[in-house]
Length: 109
Image 1 (cartoon, helix red, strand yellow):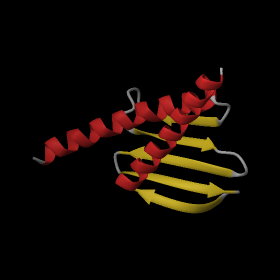
Image 2: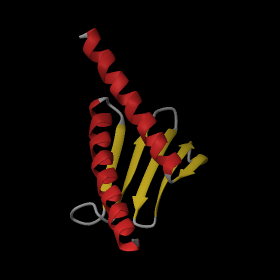
Image 3: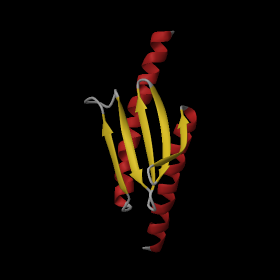
Image 4: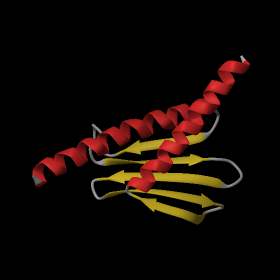
């Protein structure tokens, strides 16, 4: 059972890395400074995602084999730190916001 859970967690890490890479690209297309650096050739060791959300506000999402975290900062000061499922929910919120911006641009064009 534990080996199966470990394999499922590694699959989750890989999926999150792919999502972070796509989110960074989407944010860049919106003019937001964003980056995603993955560890390992296939992303199985994790990734670090950072986005500058203007006015000194930035977010960092870190996923590794050891855990998942979301940090929001303003002017270099940590405001919010979430881990696990809560961190993934914040990543989803950011992704939904990006999709909303893209839809609004499509309607205006």
